Length: 214
Image (cartoon, rainbow, N blue to C red):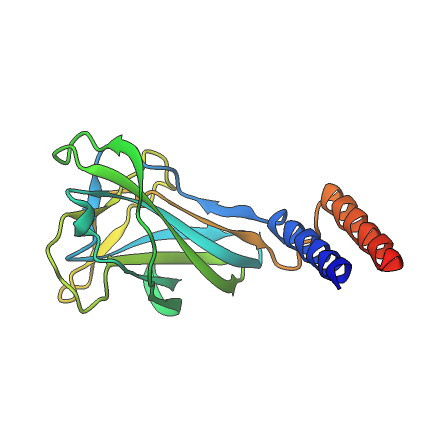
């Protein structure tokens, strides 16, 4: 029985490594410049991005700057919008996260009273076809306007198209900022790299040997 369990575990581990090896950055708007941010507690903030081909999306990463750890309300509203006339259109994917940990980066923004910087990883699972989209973020649910000092960090890179903010009353207006974020996943139906195939084949061969010995 013990050998059978070890065999199954080896197969699972091998298949798991095969899956991980397919991960990639689908879109990168740039990391934080430790300079400023867009208020995401009072406003819904949206930044545009492009997907080059049909992709399975697995993670959304963004950076914040905060006066206090407690300024993060413990969840983040996120949405992927279509692009309509250079503004967010219909919501294609989205929701309110639960239990996403804010991880300190050890850096402080230089112009927002020295606020600390954090990184968030939001696990997701959906597919996008090639095209232009908007990522929208808000601290807590959309119904929450806490006034806490949490800002979506800016980047010095970006795509030369500034983000938009919506206060729920006046619609989308330009923020003057580029927001720091990246979207990870893999091309839909991606084939593992040759090294991954070798790892998978070796794992299955070892599993076969264990079965013969059991």
